[in-house]
Image (tube, rainbow, N blue to C red):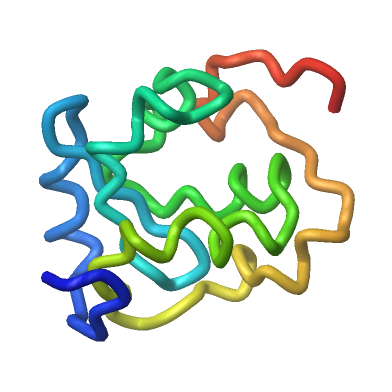
Length: 113
């Protein structure tokens, strides 16, 4: 699909793309194929691969400012997720203090947060 496509993907479809060779993520209701970008991520590919195939909005908004995806993600956007943005992942909550608990399955350590 072309970058910025308005194709709609289900969460189930996105979940099938969860490897280093085929890596999709959902951020704030948009679906990104970040396979080609993994090795360029300043924080290494590891944190992205840990959320591959899932809605990464919560951790993404906790670690990144709202300008990151418009600046860097647009070429990788392949569509939107069916059902839009769940309220708890809404970008307007990004300013709130987010506590990442052990049940969120994030194994990496955030340095300088």
